[in-house]
Image (cartoon, rainbow, N blue to C red):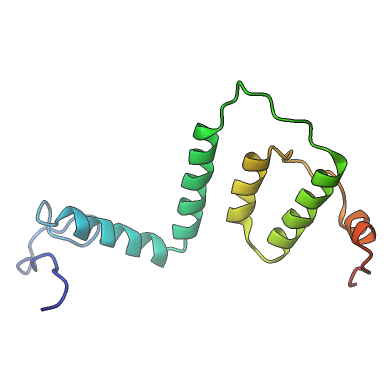
Length: 123
């Protein structure tokens, strides 16, 4: 027997916003429909990343001072950020910055980072 589905509505019957008959879907069916809808709209990854970032922010005790961000760690964080942004991992960046306490504003430009690791930038 296949996965359970919401009962089909009669022709002309009212449908809910997710295409399901109103008040007949189980919680699991609603969850599946919401995930499918967000995924088809291309926003599921953004929503997941935002939730993760908000969880980290909620768990992060703002009253505990962060240790000073030393230069080496700032360079490493910027290298990681450059890699993530270059490859389109913007959701991961949205979690990286608050979790590490790294400033939102860029600390070093791409040319400086390339020089720090001894690579030549592509044109």
